[in-house]
Image (cartoon, rainbow, N blue to C red; front, top):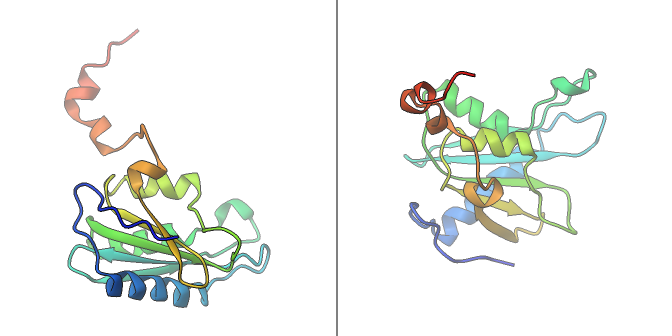
Amino acid sequence: LRQSRPIAGTRRLTQEKIKDLIHQSQLAKEHAYCPYSKFRVGAALLAQDDKVFTGCNVENACYNLGVCAERNAMSKAASEGYRSFKAIAIASDMSDQFISPCGGCRQFMREFGSSWEVYLTKPDGSYLKMDVNELLPVSFGPDDLSMEKVFNIPNK
């Protein structure tokens, strides 16, 4: 299943760029550290200047300290000064359905915008293209913390 409609506010990626981004997410998956769940996930994040940042999931014996592949990729990019992205591809070993980001990763993506592309993939390279708004509708983001909005909240 390939969704080909353009997403508002983004430049459409070429099929070659999409294929490369998915391939890089699959390569990142190979580095996953998941001794407990055995559920490998990789992500490849495309910045506005076409630089790619990859990440994999990293589990911890203290389960809530594990970090998802998507957040690792976004944190790596943010630590290098990047704040604007075109797309992210997410890969796993699930072949019966497309990998989907957890709620925490959806909110983390929203921090960096709401209209960039998210490619949910299967190991065979097929994908479903969505945007952050579709994954997290009616979301809370940085604009909700603007000074105008914060100072207009009545105290009770």
